[in-house]
Length: 192
Image: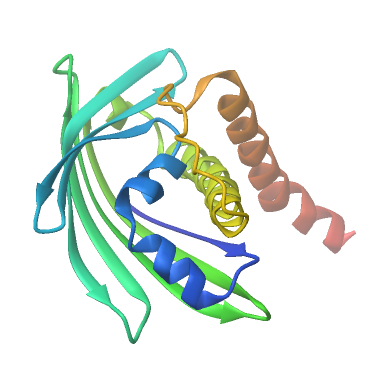
């Protein structure tokens, strides 16, 4: 399943690219993610906990940077893991490309996600909505981390609490309802 998101960061491209070079700090911005070890050669061990409805999934696995293109400001990460309770597996190729957007930076993220087991039971729309919410949270955390570094403050590690829960679920439901409204009601109103 291919999922595309983008977000803006109110910092110059060079500063955001420099931040993306510090993988532990980037991982700390992703809700529910924890790096557990640096395996060397741009490979890391870690965990990601996600709650989707009543199901809490906790994946343990590896992430490896397979491409880092300084000129194009593009980084590609391959990640794979298995749920620690044996309820499924996930693999993902994430590509992030940075480009100038006014005085700031636009970050375009493409995720090719493959799921099996409990997480695969959710529809594409729900998974896309939850991913969009997580990307929004990631972008806020990223901007806060960069701003804190500029002020000379120590970066604060994000909580390793599972991503999800009621707040993300409600935001995903609202996104789904908005999508249904746009699909079915707006064409009808325009025709009237």
